Length: 170
Image (cartoon, rainbow, N blue to C red; front, top):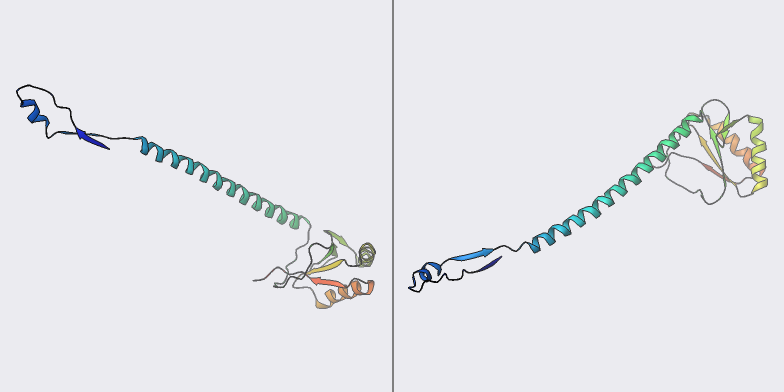
């Protein structure tokens, strides 16, 4: 804001000088105001892009979860895993996941296999890699003996790295 005196309007007799002495003019400079607004516009644009990118990422994660749930539902097996906290599985190594439902055949790799074929699959996994991890995902309602039987069959073949799949810690 600029403040100053108005130029004196000149009468020679001094009447105009007396009337103009006390009057001031005020001029508003809007340049700093526009600078602030432009900076705010840039900040809002950048933050809006960041929020939009975050929302897109969340949508992708939700879609991935839905695809996994649909894949589980389409496999035809419904397994309710017990909860647990420890995780000793090395995800970099090859694993053979055996899913044991309450009733019906055991599933390996999403495909159901008869009891006689399981030994063949375990033997092939052992021949491919002797350090193959066997992960047993058994429903909470499955009899303990059925799970132990599968573990013993894997050990007899030579697979020593056994783990029991859980639903995660609570």
